[in-house]
Image (cartoon, rainbow, N blue to C red; front, side, top):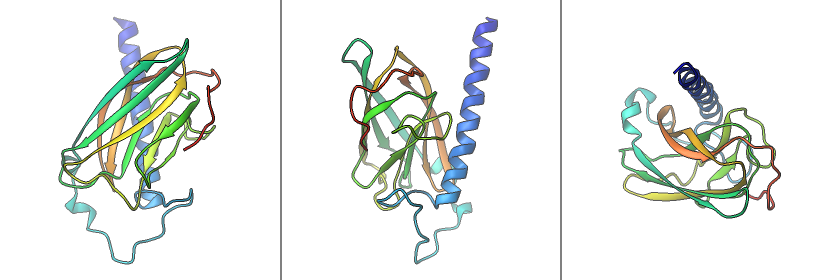
Length: 186
């Protein structure tokens, strides 16, 4: 019982730390990244007032397909279904570092995080972001990666648009220092 409480507290602490990082990144970048890894420039017309957007505006369902492909190799495919009233411009999976490879997302979405090509951002395993092609309400998108890890564990994810963020739980890789089985390419 005590171990479960400790585990739950750690998960909450990791989630709060990741949320703070996500919010700081979203605020610093204006909600996404352009085709390069440089921050997006300011739009020519002012964005809608943030007070008009609430956390209830971002609504989606994330499903995951996990496949064990080799001794320690796993394939993760996440389907994000936008069921809200606003586009989704960010999808983040929080977790300990693991060496992801063959990281894929929709066209014009960039990926970064602790698990992507030796990136930084502790507790952010991978964050896909776009400034030009958000996931519109009523549409779905696929995000995927391969990883060499010791198994699967429950992780926290978030969907975002501007300052509106929705959190949920999905399966993801356990933290791992095992080398990737392929090139890190996003």
